[in-house]
Image (tube, rainbow, N blue to C red; front, side, top):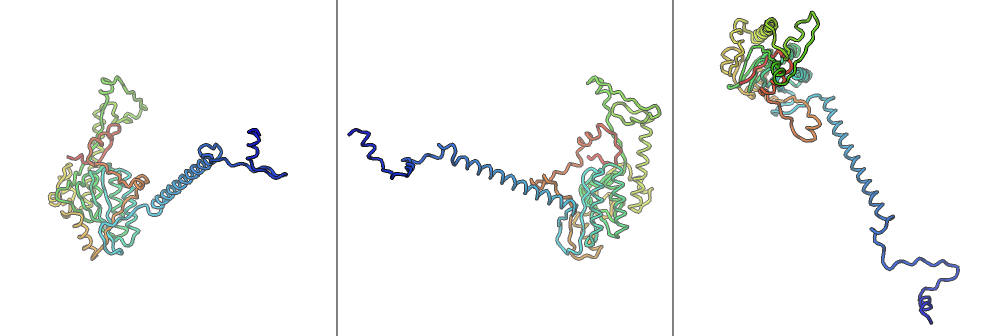
Length: 354
């Protein structure tokens, strides 16, 4: 018997009419060797998980955005508790910080509007840390405070901490009482206009000569331009404009502080005063810290244990996600101010600092 016959005899016999069953290999084929098996399922699982995580992240982002928009639309301002007390009797703190611009005035309007609508707010303390800024928003805030006092009959006190000068003092003059800390800078009743002339630098250093063409009857169209020195006539007109604003500033202080303009003018030379000197010159009522102001206002309003709250702007989405507060711009950063003045002349009620 040959070898082939032996091999055939060793195979299992299959009954007639039936197909032979597939013979299993002695060892299973490894998963990584199959091109059509489990690896395709793993890839599908990975793609599905990735898509799932993407939609979850999208949902979370949508929720955060909707919460933020709800804060903006429904509340507009947030309230932080500065001192616990009776919820039905509140004193609201409103900050006036940094250089005053139109955004500052708009924020002041919103906060006063909120304090006017809230019946639990019995009085307001304006917390001032500002060297002033532009004329229109300073006068606008003065008007907002006077209207608030007249329409609501709620009192507004001021706590000047580091500095309450120029436009900030213009604003504060509309309140019921002004307090300042001992070493604060108060006053600077004056007006200033600053602009830079880069004509020589452009011509001599860069070889650039600006050309400005004005309409025939508008010779003052480029008054205050950084590309040329002002004429003597222009300097006179600028000085006249500043003097008009200065006079208005003195009138505002006179009306708010209930002293004559003759008493104000000697103090309206741009000088700042510390707390005690400011009180002696009738620019403030008392020397003290913020808590002293709150206690005095509570006593005036006959509130035993008022809750003190602070109106603040809601945080930006970036702040909410990073939990990082935005750093306040240094109001006495003169270099930053000079950068702003480099291109456009501006009339300001601003104290330049020390």
